[in-house]
Length: 259
Image (cartoon, rainbow, N blue to C red; front, top):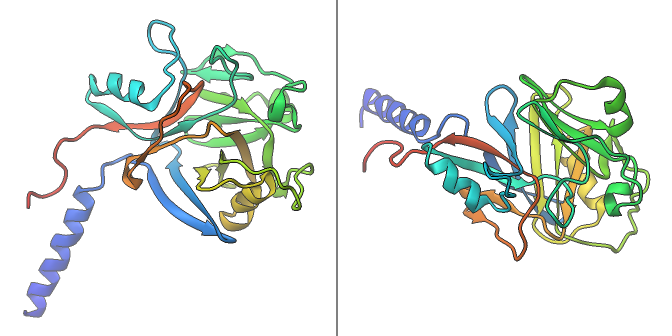
């Protein structure tokens, strides 16, 4: 094979890879930290179409990734990634603040003693036009950022680089857990679910010490689910979910070069 042929083959392979990676698709991967496996999906502010989903057009909770995908398919779209996005009451309404398409559906809440939500400080994940943020609730109340989408949950996992003060390294309480962290510049949001039951301290340590994220928020445990087709995964469960977050992309029947 001549040098020119080798260069052309390399160019053809690169072009194929570019074509087979849909624009706006979530970047999902597996990771391991201190012997524990995690699945994570990363989104980029201003590039990926990241949305929150609560109720369908009839006011019925979406409840599952499958129902959302079914309606998106009618528009030639699909979820490239999704996960549950905050605690909810038995009727699937969010426990705390919920903003969708710029409209506040549920107001900011103190949290009281409502399970892990009440393990203060709790916080808010906010999607703005060109950035993301994870903000402790009292600070969020003061600053009131202009969120297009927002979900409040708790507890905070990492606060300005510090692990939540109530988390103990010696804890024995373990669950499958999921949450979100934001890069210091606010340009990246990383959504994580543990592959095995973990403690709060282990989970928070992954965000801070492995991913280098200074602010992270807990979404939930026990009911945690992930939809990540690129990882060959779409979790289902016995009970419907409340708030769901995910990236939407155009569905393509044929991607890349024919073989």
